[in-house]
Length: 301
Image (tube, rainbow, N blue to C red; front, side, top):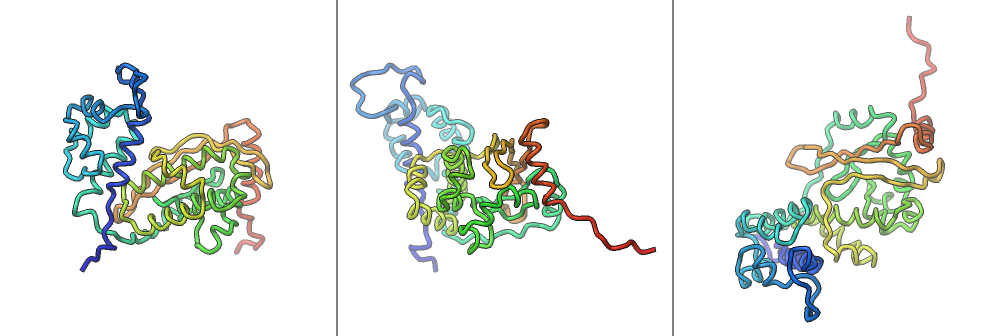
């Protein structure tokens, strides 16, 4: 029988997310007059309700976390009223799906085994650092150039006892990460936003909650960023790294969905340097150190 401890409730996440989005939305952005008499930042509940076409009482109940039985049309109206971007909209719908009674059982999600063909594909990218990451941002498959590029993280104490590198743990529990990532704060915020989106998709994953709890306890920076309720699902951009062996690198990256068994959500991330730049030269140097050495054995005749 399921015990009370096995049940989780995401009403606080729903409340905090909607409240934070409402607080960030200036009245003039939705055509409302700005008044000095406003006591709260952003919009009032009744203003969001009017923009969404629902009663204030109904919206107040929604903002308190009672979202499980809400129709998609109403959720869409609320998303439009709050001017949510696409990632935030997906997050809101994920929160609603997770709030349904049938989804409220806490579980420890099993790690999905990466098919050998995926590892072969990643290994074949000899001039591009590539890796597969799980929803908890563990690196579960990588090529040699990725391991060379991210050697400070793979060699970190945050990885040694875990069996795999984890971006949030390295960012927030290893002081060296602030030297390795040139834009540490931007990268840290993006990492938390990606983790927040995963928590919205599957808030009942016990291992994910334990990771968030660990980081919230040990890192004030993580705790503050987690409380902002920012989300990111589509992950791409430019990464600037200060590599201990080859120096400064500026790399474009893009993450692509990688469908796997058991509806697991993983991303394939690939990095590349702009042709003709010093970053390309440094990446090629790093690649030359990781390239397989030709066999010295004489071929059979």
